[in-house]
Image 1 (cartoon, rainbow, N blue to C red):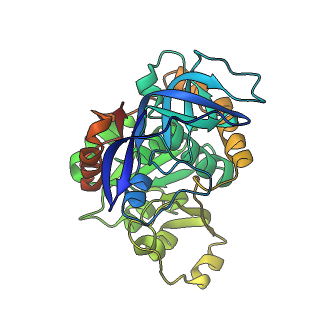
Image 2: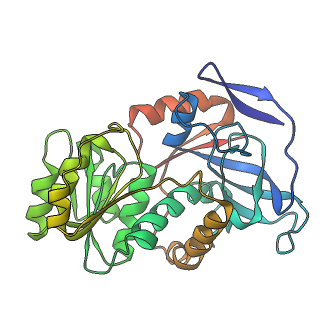
Length: 319
């Protein structure tokens, strides 16, 4: 098969060995694969794949099962699925544990379904499973125009929360159309004062992709009892944390990643997403937001678009 390999921090299309379905795994013929910031970090040498994962980038895909490994009894060849991957999505085929498969939501194509696994599992595992966002609370999403951001806005809205987000001015109208109650231009505005002014108390949950650069301001923007979860480090790795502010607000700060979690934990998250989020997609409350679809051979161009932050929603590759 053909896959996109990383050679001297460059993406190169190469012919490689076909994957085989190991114990508890299936092989998927890939229809489309999602592009994520983590793929860019891997290409740059900052985010190596976990042990046992394919060396090729790509954390999500959708396609058709072409082989079923030993111990898999509830999947069959020819089944249409989406998948959360530890790597290997930038390829014509990929092997994945059966517990990380999701059904294709009714009414969606395989290409549309490929835009969902990573964002849905990331947002659900943090905003719902960890931070327990509730109806009537306020959610602040940084990077509203990203794949994570566009999904989080829709999920927060569907759960009955007020949703605030930060984004460049050119993306504001689109994000309001997704359900954001307030969009803040992070290049000119102050999201701390805007969040406090919105409800008089701050955000109950903050989902942050920026990291160190925003840490102190995120604490200021939290409401009493608020929960801050950091899932990215685009603004750096290290910052000073004022424990006095954290304690005074009875707030919490957590940081998570999805890729390196044990397979059993990923399977639990996938099951939770299938149970609670997929019905919202099938009802039309959440839809995949796809900015661009490119041929797999153009993966380098897809990364350039990702790094420019000029897109809204997901970038997909098709073998």
